[in-house]
Length: 140
Image 1: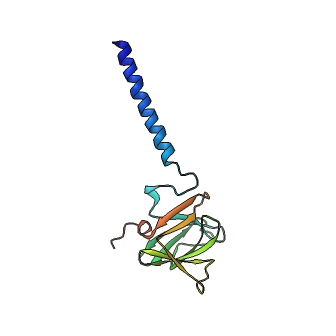
Image 2: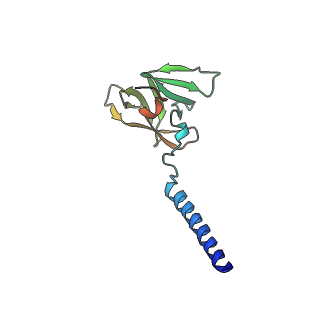
Image 3: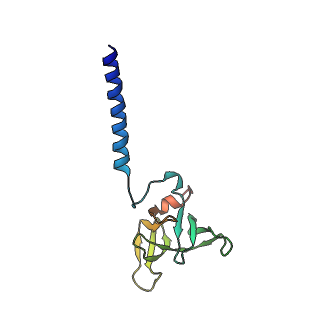
C-alpha cells in the first residue's frame, strides 16, 4: 500500500513538473515581445538620442516622462520618436485606434499605419504596444 501511494505521489509530482516545464518553454519569447500585463498601459522606450522615456496616451497626445529629468521634463506631445526592433528610427502619431508611422520622422514621404508600435525598451528588448493598451484605461 505504501509503495502504491508513493508511486502515485511521484507520478503527480512528475506531471506537475512536466506541465510547468512545458508552460515555461512554450511561453518563452526570447527577444520577442514580452507579455507584461501590469505594464502594458505605458511604454518604456529609447528615443533617437538614446534618452530613456516612459509614454502613454491621454486624449489625442502622448504623455511623456523622461528618466533623466535634469535635461527634460514631463510633457505632452502629438508624436514620439523611437527605435524599432531592427534599430531603425521612427516617429509615431496617434490616428484613431492606430498609429501613423514615419520612417526617420520624414512625414513628406510615405507614412504607414500600424495597429501597434514595435519598439526597443530600456533593456534593449523588443516590445509591442497598441493604442488601446497605452490609453491607461480611459473611457472611449
